[in-house]
Image (cartoon, rainbow, N blue to C red; front, side):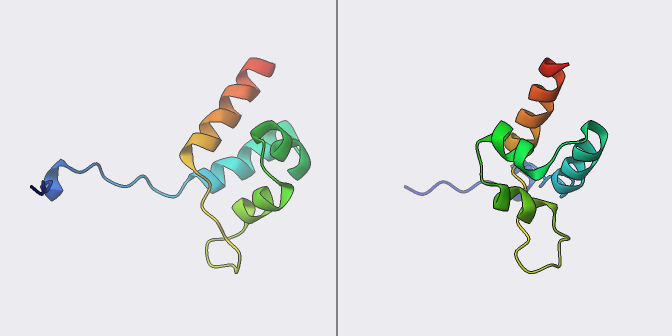
Length: 78
C-alpha cells in the first residue's frame, strides 16, 4: 500500500537564511572558521563552503540543525 500526502499538508521549505545567519554570527562574535568548525564538529573547509555565495562553486547550504546548535552554544557560552 502506498500513501501519498497532499501537497497542502507538506510544510513549506524554509528560506535559505542559515548561511547568512552564519556570517552574521561569525561577525558578531568574531569567530574564525576554525572556531566554528570546532564548535560544530565539522571541518573548517565545510564552514568555508557554508560561507560561500549561493552561486559560487563549492557552495553548500548549512543545515538548520547546525545553525541552531551554533546559536545555542553561543548563548550558553555567554
